[in-house]
Image 1: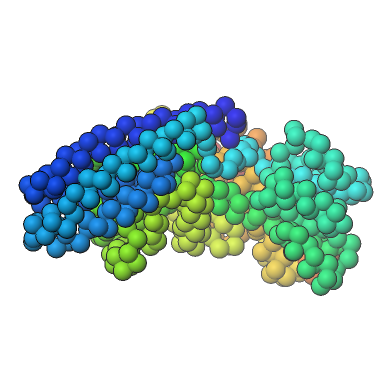
Image 2 (image 1 turned 60 degrees about the vertical axis):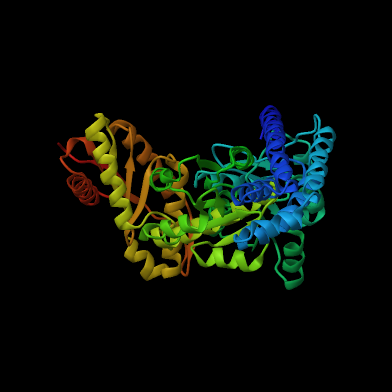
Length: 546
């Protein structure tokens, strides 16, 4: 996050804090009126319930806005009132028990609001870690042997990775212009500079390379924070595949889609600012809980953050309602509440929840929890929707996405391309090099497609060695150019199998989605073009005739 953005978020958080303080001051006016009624023996049960709800809100939200002492004391006063609200039968007993002390406690609480406001003047800060952002992953290769480093960087470029080459870690620490997504480094360089590296970028994934291999060496690298290790001779397709997995995992761990359901507007906006400044996509349900279900289908969150009690609306009841729909049975619901009673928390979890965070929640803890939950949700979703070998869309989902793109072409009069891709002589690869090498070839093509194509493009594994690709807003000339480049780059990748080093070529059949009445016909035309490509000699792109 840039300094200007951080300052902007800090200014917004400061305004929210001021709004909270002004609102709390008005609430103290109402509470003191109730205290006067209690002191005069004239309070009724609705007034007692109002006092309890207000204290409950202050206990849960004050700490978030920088008034921790106010939150702690509000919680103590809330617990004094709670038994009488739960009983709900004898208001006279509540009046006699609370008496004049209740008024004095409120006076003390208001003083804490004033003290907290004076202490925090001009001190609103953003307590979330910044994220390195970039359109494409950059691999920093640190290799003392310049010739070896250039060879490694060139090999990784075939998979679509942009590489930066340096001789030692110290050179990089003096180069703020290089902002890598991952590091490939010699073991001795990593061990020599791991402390500086961890201090500068504690979450940056590192792959270590070595001329030798031993338990002691591996253990030392793991202790220093390395996430992968490869010894010579280097298997570059395997390293490229590992790069892809690490980058995907780290990207997934830092992002996510969060739906916030909370009736407190200041808290809701505070959570939104904190999570959004940490790289999350956030949507909120404000005011009307009947908007919850439409927003689920519109926003499609990874997790839901939900208050337990929102006036007359129960969070656990909303969670149960969400589970009415089979599609949302696995959607994680994380409760946010000032409720500290473990029995009450467990009861809420039993009614459709997955986790419970007790307010107040620090900004950094909220962000880490949201990221962790979103990451786990995405991992589980991949098990259902993604091919286990390649991480691409499964056959049925890929076809469904192509059908959506075809409908968009018909509706918006756009031109989009659809392609069928097939590895040439793949049976021979499995027979001569082994199935493990065959799997590596399939994963290699999947990784290349992910990096060579746009994030908006649709990529699926159609079955075996066949792939289905759709290129939205792409005419035939553009599609041919892109896919011919993919064929050329893939043919230059060198794999290693049981019979030695080898390369594989790729055949592509292409058609225009807009030229066909339905998506199946366009895919069939691309498949026929692929067949024609095979008969014409493979290794290239053939366009379906109109």
